[in-house]
Length: 130
Image (cartoon, rainbow, N blue to C red):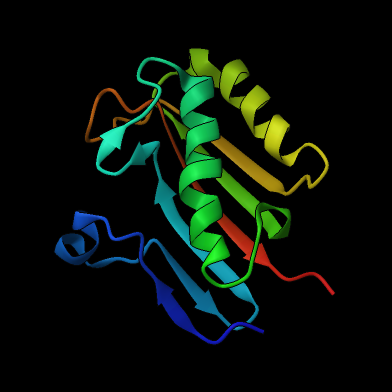
C-alpha cells in the first residue's frame, strides 16, 4: 500500500491554484484533470486522438509511476471533450490504452477549456488490485 501523499508534476499552476497532480489515499490514487500539456507546452494541437494518448502516456502514467502504480491499475476514467465530434477519435485512443483494462468510464462533451486549443482533459482513479 502506498503511503498517503501528494504527487506533483512540477507544473506552475499546482501551487497557484492549490492542487496536486494526484493524491494517494490508502490503496487509491486519484489523478487530477490532466491535459496534453508537457513541459508547459500543449502537445498534438488540433489532434484529439494525439492529445488523449499524450495525456494518458506522458502526464497521467508518470504521475502514477511516482507511487508504483501503472495505467493497468486504473479503475475509473473521466474524459472531458471540447467537441462531441471528437468522441470517436478520443474513444479510439482511450481503447488503445485501456482496451484490456476496461475501467469504468465517463465521457462528457461541450466543455470550455481555459486554453481553447485543449481538446480533451482526463482524470483517473487507480487502485492496486489484489
